[in-house]
Image 1: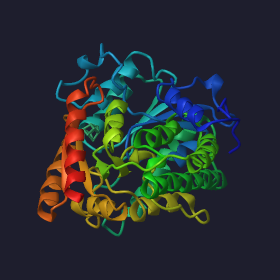
Image 2: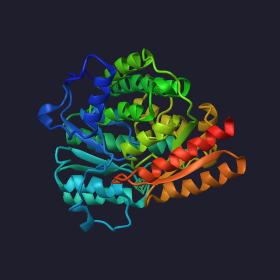
Image 3: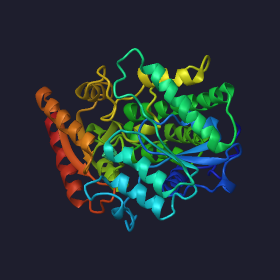
Length: 392
Ligand code: SF4
């Protein structure tokens, strides 16, 4: 699908990063300011949303990642209990205060009870929008899993076509898969830089670059990443004496930027699960054959693990240990969002296993609406110093 790129700074890496930071808080575009080829927008809640299907239907995918720490909650509390995590509350607030009023539709998944119920809240409060729950399988280790996911993807595709008012053909879906495959290649390249030369790209910068895709078309994001990667490779920054760590626990609710900056100040984050919902397919999707089947098969065979995917081939401990090994990390920062049951469950399992295998780790809890980071910064400083002392 050809798209007309809105303004993207053409020059320096700093300007690209600044642009990405602006996009982080940018509103959902109205239908009159969409890139060419798109007639509406689909908001999708983390984690495993096949953006290619919306993209091919002409509905620009908008990743919904909550309201951050500047949003004041005025309406959401009337719709959900106080024990619900921040991202669910702030996403609801943004729906109710009109910030997501330009969406043509909203898709969530049953990753947890709170996320699943967002579908009902949306349908009741915003009847003009398409509201869908994408039912991914609870167990992917059955022979029928690919067939089931393909049928669910086809159902979603038909709903989106109805909303967009036009059918899609397999060729346009293959074109979307091609665009996203290019995106996947670029994101893998970005993370390879983080592993190989972490002094060239901080976790915060990488986060901003990846997150930009929640507000722009994949094609524009590809062009942005190509220029950014060239700029990062050309950077002349000296390596510092910092421990190499992996960050886990950012798969759904997003930690505040200030928290990532505090980690960057003390450690090189050489791998993470931040924004995993924008890069959950770990290899290219086949560009020939039945495109829906190819996407469904990719979910089963080539998708990133997270606390909300249940696949007996990917144990909680196993995928963390893989991250540590492949990124040659010294230690782990094991986080969970406040009130996130799947995340807190995983945090316990991870900590227990790291104790058993003797890998050092720091446990941190966060909430997207956090505003005070002094204590966390001190914890991080002490942690980094103890790691450096241990390896000295
Ligand atoms: S942060 Fe945790 S509890 Fe909240 S929606 Fe995501 S998975 Fe569910």
